[in-house]
Length: 178
Image 1 (cartoon, rainbow, N blue to C red):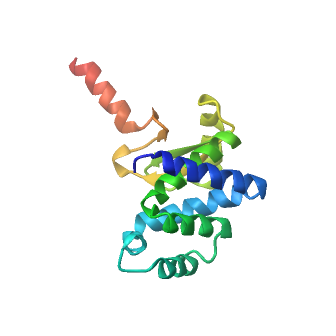
Image 2 (image 1 turned 30 degrees about the vertical axis):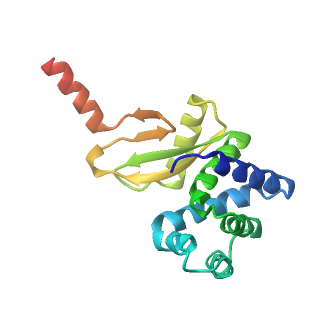
Image 3 (image 1 turned 30 degrees about the horizontal axis):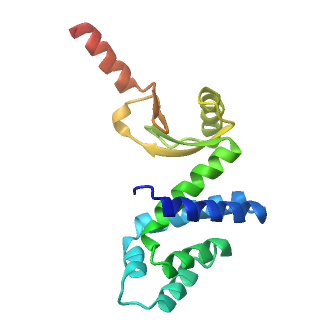
C-alpha cells in the first residue's frame, strides 16, 4: 500500500502513545499480527470499509476480532473508522513498525532458505547481518524457497545478500559462457 501523510500522522500518534504507556514492544508485536489479519482476510477489511454497515457495527466487529490485542490499537482502528480512513490501516501499521524499528535499532529481514531455520540459526543470522546494516538486531521472517538448492538469501529493506547455491551456479554459468 502507498504511504500517505494521514497514515504517517496516525502512526506517529499511536507510536507516541505506546511510548508514553511503555507498551512499544507489545504494540509493535500486536500490530504485526493485525497486519497479517488484514492481509490474509481481505473480507474483514471489506466489511470495515463497507458503507452498508454502520460505524457502531464496524467498531463492535473490531472489538471482537481484535479482543486479545492492546486496547490502544483497537482504539486507533476505531478512530480510522470514525474518520473514514480504514483504508489507511495497513499503511499506518507499516509506518508504526518502521518508527519502532528505527527507535529500537532493529530492521526487518526476510531470510529465504530451503528448510525452516532453527532458533540458533536465526540468532546467528541476526547477529551477523545486523552489524552489516548498522542495526542492533534483525526481526527475521523465514521463507522457504526450494529453488535456492542450498544456502540462504537475505533481504533487509532494499539490500539483498545472496549466498545461495543457485546464485553461485548462475554466477559460474555467466563466467563460463561469457
